[in-house]
Image (cartoon, rainbow, N blue to C red; front, side, top):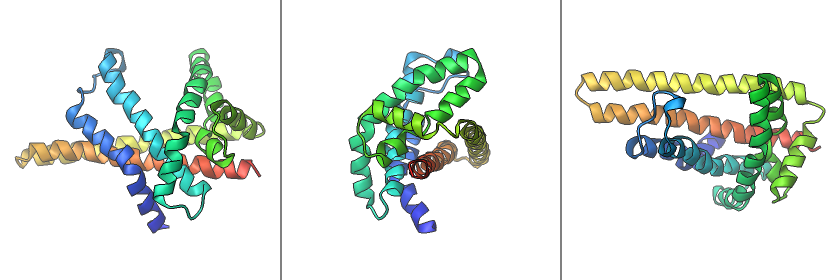
Length: 217
């Protein structure tokens, strides 16, 4: 189990951890609030990590869907289905976004019904984004409420991991600054949240693949 987790970590880390640290070091500074976010900050802080991280998420899902596959083969599969995944995400973002605007609960329910796109693309072995959206919707038809509850728990878990990583990074940053190691402190402050992002990406990719395999039976 630990060997599998280590392999998944090193498979996904270049698309999450390294990207997070690189943007923190060389990208524009994050805004104080979402309303103050500029176009460049929106691109580097949200769009780039999401698009690049999707490759890692798909690769993690491929390792589950295709038991015994090598990391290289999983990455090849991830890059092959990445364009369809991005298009599918854009397709579902509209109804999910409207659901959240109208009322939070419909948005959560729609998100849960359409949240298994990585597994749908890989488990069903289809390259069409529309087919992936249909498969995700069909697979979750009988379990929408339970999946919505699961998604809420998962979101809180992700938020918790992110907060703990940020607090730990900030604390170590402060200690290292007091020790005269400000540059190292900044790096550690970026590194720990990046590790948290890596593990949450692995978790979502693996959970999506396992759920889709069971729902497709």
